[in-house]
Amino acid sequence: DEYRARHRDQRAAEALRRFLETTPVYAIWDDHEVRNDFSGPFDDRMPIGRQALREYWPIRVAADDPDRLYRTVRAGTDLEMFILDTRQYRSRNIDQDGPAKTMLGEKQLQWLLSGLTESSAMWKVIVTTVPLSISKGGSASVPGNDGWAGGPGIPGFERERQVIVDHILGRRVKNVVFLAGDVHYVQANAYDPNGDGIADFHEFVAGPLSAVAGKPTSASVGLRPTTLVNEGGYMNFGLIRVTESSFDVRVLDEDGATRFSHHLSAR
Image (cartoon, rainbow, N blue to C red):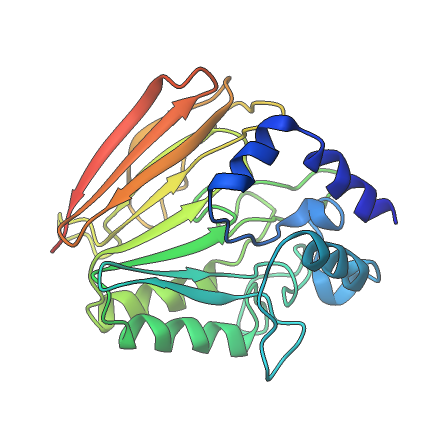
């Protein structure tokens, strides 16, 4: 009932109600649907948090797994979104990185890799909820690292991240874009992990829209990022327009002013 009350509290906002009346929403959870930076297999509240999420957000139940939240959304030939569940199957954040540590679980990881290879959409968008290159966590109350990137003394999930990157490069999957949130500020990165001078994929991080605005930190260097923007201190959201040949990103603040924009051309 506590989780349901939190969802009802959000729905009391008139602006959100108007938004939901006019806009399709493809929801996925992150940590605060259960508790801060939780790892699903080790949190006894995870099932009830998942149940409340399903009651308030329309997520189709998979015939082969009623608990599954990850899925794809296709928009014609232009776009396929891979919406990841980064919570339900993850190892403990504090675990040392290595072959046994996972954020996605083996089944979801293989689903993602196969989907990227087989997708005929021009743009392949991976919704990951936590950023690729922002090290976060490591506090006394939240030990370990909650994002993909590790930091000094706080291991991340870099081995599994590298599996995904190696697949994108090895299979020559083009026009891959990662979307993330969680950190409460704006960051965008063009990644060149093989160091050939050409960006192999991009990441755009936006938010928050209804929480405390955060202070930005630099992207870790492991994937050779070129940071396009890195700023915080204001409420914001992302707006993306996709065509067969282009992927245009804008970040707008609470007054509707554009604070960042970037254009990608299909390769």
